[in-house]
Image (cartoon, rainbow, N blue to C red; front, side, top):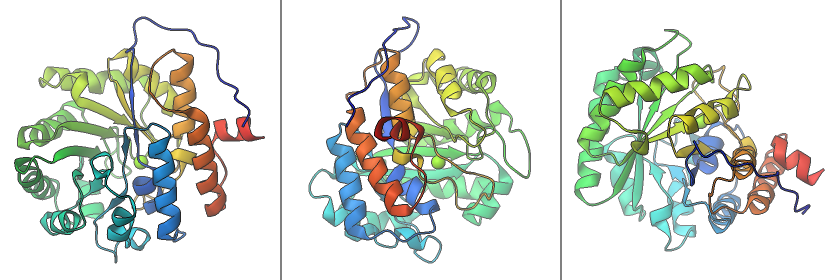
Amino acid sequence: MSGRHPTVHRDPALPRRVTVYEVGARDGLQAESALVPSTAKIDFISRLRAAGLPWVEATSFVSSRRIPQLADAAEVLAGLGTDLEAHPVLVPNLRGLERARAAGARTIAVFVSATESFARRNLNAGRDDSLETARRVVEEASGEGMRVRGYVSMCFGDPWEGEVAVDEVASVSRSLLDSGCAEISLGDTIGVGTAGHVAELVAAHGRAGIGPELLALHFHDTYGQALANVAAGLRSGVACFDASAGGIGGCPFAGSATGNLATEDLLWMLSGLGIETGVDLDEVVAAGAMMTDLLGRPRSRVATALLG
Ligand code: MG
């Protein structure tokens, strides 16, 4: 490993510490056509956690007919040992919650769409019905003391409806927080967001009484805007960002969505800004490269630069 790192120039206007929330093993692998063996997933997740990532989302208890890539959810959790607090799993409904609980899950995430069209295509239900399903899962899980994260997808626009009103998104977030979510991750599922839009979306949440400490931002690099959007999010006071080691994945139900923001690329930028993450960049680079090599997919920018 090269040991190269960026020069550091702190910007006092930005948060001193940021949480990097790792989604590669769930959001990444669900979108890859290859079926990765459970042992390779467990190794990938364990290495990312050992690198210092506080949250490494492990899998999803969705129907294996819909997402065969994650059909081994219970085996993956079983292979992760006792550290399950740090490994959230996605749960689509009460049946999924039941399966997740039986597999030992301690932390979960639910998923709703900011738009009607994406809800119908991705969740097979209207937006309000799927929000209601998610709220029931959140109430039950948080009532048992589980930490629940709420994902809102298509926050910046969707392929069928175009731009999405920022206040609409904030009202969906409000509803999830009211039912017991600890944090809301705002997803740019098709990567169409740009920096000014990020600032407006965070401001709209502020108007709805949702401060940046309750938000995470989930960017896709489809149009090369992910890190610029992170910078805008930091400037708005957001201190949690989702990323995928190796940049794997996108969205399986939105054809145009490619490229989660790579964790390595995010860490490089945060490190250059003097922002603490507690994460070892070189270890994430090695884990990400292991998975992209296994998938036969290009490495992230930072992995390519550091590994040659
Ligand atoms: Mg994603």
